[in-house]
Each structure stands twice: as structure tokens, then as C-alpha cells.
Length: 230
Ligand SMILES: NC(=O)c1ccc[n+]([C@@H]2O[C@H](COP(=O)([O-])OP(=O)(O)OC[C@H]3O[C@@H](n4cnc5c(N)ncnc54)[C@H](OP(=O)(O)O)[C@@H]3O)[C@@H](O)[C@H]2O)c1
Image 1 (tube, protein in one colour):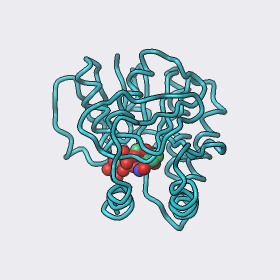
Image 2: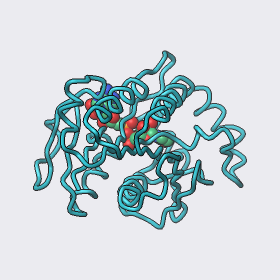
Image 3: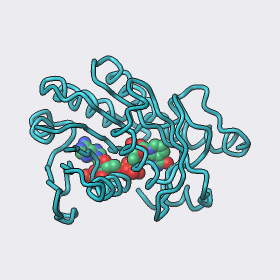
Image 4: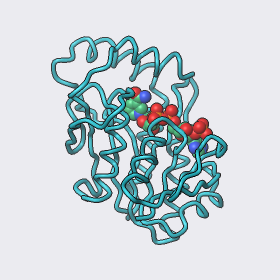
């Protein structure tokens, strides 16, 4: 399969690219910073801002599926990265007759999502970190899901919980709409996307993805995702 990966230079996008190449797919890695991607057999690098219609149209030419792991940071200001890129990517796909789209969003977008047995997360961290500091980002993620839902494409929203790095793929779990857990390893998120491309179990719906086999330290996660990443 020929797969186009947006956000290919980000932490999940790199894993997704590596796993896709290892599975024998041809990968078009879309990035704004091409210099930091190592050239390999099966890999084509496309330089594009995901909100640039001409560059996106070129990047997805001849592809079988588009997988997006792109994202941005929390901000006090309105965020537009998700909805703007979602609009440009779906427009280009529709024009070119490319139908399969998997986009990373978040379990937070399910209004009923409250992971069980996670009192501190549900009552302290989630309201403060995700719903207050991450408010504008999640508003835009929601707009992106709305844009994509309005298309005729075969889309899947891939919804992780708090992301952390773990060196190997574990026995992750998926569930429709959202998954009951606080954490998702990026390696599992990438693996779930590749499996969904092959299996098509969650077409035109959302797939929650969680990791239960290993648990990161919550302090380390906040440090890595909220402080160090900026
Ligand atoms: N962190 C969490 O706990 C958490 C939880 C749930 C969901 N998520 C979502 O999971 C996804 C993956 O997160 P991640 O931490 O692996 O990646 P990330 O740090 O959010 O980075 C994603 C990549 O997106 C690229 N990007 C942003 N805007 C772009 C644009 N206009 N054009 C082209 N590329 C653009 C960035 O490219 P550059 O390198 O060029 O800047 C970056 O490499 C994100 O959507 C995130 O919101 C995260």
C-alpha cells in the first residue's frame, strides 16, 4: 500500500512511518522540516505545510490512504491547525478520489469519557490540564472532526488518551467512540492506525486506543508533554 503520513516528523508520526515501512508499505512522509528524516527504501519525503492546498495536493497524489498524526501545543489563543489542515486534506482527497483517512484526535472528544478508577485524573488533571489549559486546542480538534464528518470519505478518528513513549508495541485495546483508560503509548497508537488501515473495523466512526500493559509516571508525562515539549 502507498500511505501518506502527515505529521511524519512528530513523535507519533516517526513511529508510524517506521512501522509502516517495516510492514512493507510505501510511505510518503509529509513534513515542514525534511532535513531530519533519514532517507530509506520505500520512503518519499514531501515538504508541505498541511494547510497549503497546492503542497497537500501534490503530497497525496496516487496514495491509497492518508494518515494524520499532526498536532500542535496548548495555547491561550485560538488554535486552527486541526480544522485548517482537516479542511485542506479532505478537499484534496475528495478532488483526487482518495477515500481512506485516519486522523488522530483524542478520547477527550467523547463527552462521556471518564476513565474508570481514575479519581485524581477525572477530578483534578483532566479539568485543569485538558479542559482548561487545552481548551482552545480541543475546540479546534472538535471543529476538525466536524469538517471530516461532513465529507463522504471513509474516515476514522483515532482517539488516544495521554500519550507517552514506550519502546515496543504492547497488547493495546481499541473501542468504538472512546476507550476506557488514561494513557496511550505512541507505539501502540501508530500500530493501531496501521491495523485499522488493513482491517477497516472503524470506518466512519471513532476508535479509542489505550495502553494498559505499561503505565507511565503521571509526573513524568506532564513534564514531557506539558513542560519539556514547549
Ligand atoms: N500529548 C498527548 O497527551 C495527546 C493526547 C491525545 C491526543 N494527542 C494528539 O496526538 C497527536 C500526535 O501527538 P504527538 O505528540 O505525537 O505529535 P505532535 O508533537 O503534536 O507533533 C505532530 C507534528 O505535526 C506537525 N505539524 C503541525 N502543524 C503542521 C502543519 N501546519 N503542517 C505540517 N505539519 C504540521 C509538526 O510538524 P513540525 O515538526 O514541522 O512542527 C509535528 O511534527 C496530536 O494530534 C495530538 O494533539 C496528544
